Every structure is written in structure tokens, then in C-alpha cells.
Amino acid sequence: MSLSPQHNSLRSLTYVPSCPRLCPIARVVTCSATTTKSRSSQNQLVIEPRLVSSPDLVTPNNIISNSGPPLPNDPTLQSTWSHRAWVASGCTTLLMSLAKAITGAADSHMWLEPIVAGYVGYVLADLLSGVYHWGIDNYGDASTPIFGSQIEGFQGHHKWPWTITRRQFANNLHALARSVTFAVLPIDILCNDPVVQGFVTACAGCIMFSQQFHAWSHGTKSKLPPLVVALQDASVLVSRSQHSAHHRPPYNSNYCIVSGVCNEFLDKNRVFEALEMVVFFKFGVRPRSWSEPGAEWTEEADETRPQPTVVH
Image 1: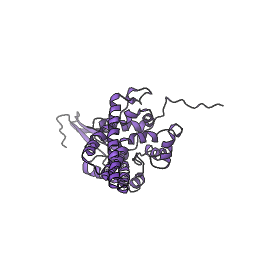
Image 2: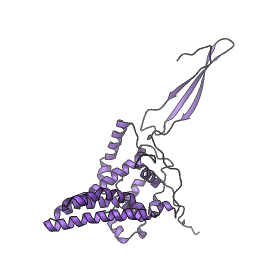
Image 3: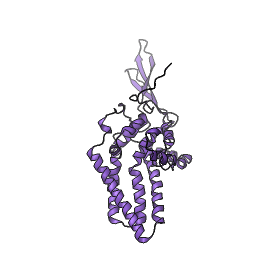
Image 4: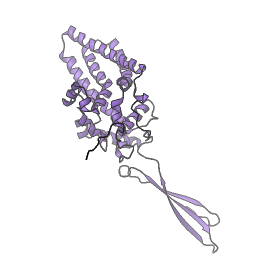
């Protein structure tokens, strides 16, 4: 850097911390160097430090909605006829698949293989729900193509998790029901193998209803149907206690929301941490879970519920 005595000049020196895990929020320190020509013709160097905040470096699009939680009668929580139609369509395709699995097993007198295939599909659905949940929790934002609205919804869910219990059934399931319809209907038409149909019925069915299982895991035990509570206690569906661990800092465990059967293996072996390192070294993108959760991650209380009163 050369300094000319004849002209005033401005130079900026910028320093950015480079430790990705130890510096969750980077600060950029800019020092401007100004030269002036004094009466004694001596060059003087004046250092004027300025602290400038840089954008968040967690992800390229790390934006979490700052809007407030939905109101109790918010129309975004209500089911529409379009939602109901997609859920009906998804249920119809699943029933067709189940019927083919049962009739095929009866005709071939082969029951064990379709049942085992169904169990494999059930476990795989739990695993897939965890991988998907991990991905949209940690990467992207509302502007991400295809998945943007779901990413925004899950980010808001961390701040106001109780709102999912107010979302109506078809409203909660319609997006997954639409995907299941498009994926399963061709299999129903082209395939008559009871083993394949048993696998598809269990896997697609659990994926489609995973958001309802998720909603039940946020419910109050006294308000849930007794059958749901029994299935949660038997670990057939993800339990309230297991999923509540996901909503505690640093929000990097218990991602699976069908049964939670895969959570112990995934967390104990740090599978998602390994995937995060691969993504970071390959693309330079950090997951949100690496950053110290701030106010945008902190759960807010449900102010619409009556608060308990203390009688002295």
C-alpha cells in the first residue's frame, strides 16, 4: 500500500475471523488509513477504527421469519377443500396398495414376506423423516425453490412449536398427501407383487401421516386419544418426551418423527454431524445447529392460553 503526500487517500483494512465453529457470528473490523499534508510537510498516518457487522455466515440464506405466531383462528391453520381433496386422494392410493398387498398375499399364500416388507418400510419411513427434518432445519430459507415454504414453516415451528396442535388435519397433511398420490399411484397401477405393495403401503403411509404423528408429539396427554397415547408409550409412534429433546438447544438430535426408532442410532453414531462436515467441506455451508441459538430459535410461550393464577 503506497501513501502519496500530495493527495488525501483512504484505504480499508478488513479482517474476518476464520474459525467456522468457534465464531458463529463474524465481525468485520475495518480500519481506514487517511494521509494528510501538514504545514511542516510531514506525512501523518491517522488510523480510524470502525466496527462493521457482517451478514450471518451460517448459511447463504439464513433467514428466519420474524413474523409473530399464527392467531388461534388464523386462516393459514384451517383446512380448505383443496387440502381435503389431496388427503382423500393420498388415502385412496394407500388403500389401493394395501388391498393389492392383502389379495396378493392371499392368492400366493405368502404372508410373512409382505409383513416383513411392511416393517422395513415403517423403519425406513422413520429414517427418511429424520433426514428430511435435519435438512430443512439446517439449510435454506423461505426463498429456496420447492422446499422454501416447508423450511419457513419448520423454522417458525421451533419458535412456536405449540401452533402445530392447532393446525387442522387436512391442512397439516395435504402437501405430503399430494406427494404420496403422485408416487404411489403408478406403483398401484403397474405392480401386483404383494411384497412390494406391503413395503409401499407402510413406508408411504407413515411418511404421509408423519406430520400428524409430529403434531401428537406436541399434544397434551390428557387431550390425546387413548389409542395414540398407548402407541406413543409403546414407541410405535414418536413419544412426547423423545421429541421434546429436539426442541432443546442445540437442536441437533432426535430428528425422526414417525416412531423415533432410528434416533438413538443416528445420534449415538453422530451421523448427522458427519453429514454436516461433508456439506461444509464440500460447499462451505454451515448448518444452523453449529451456531449458538439466538432469539429466533428461543421458544415463546403460548400467550393465548390462560395463565395459572397463584392464590396467596
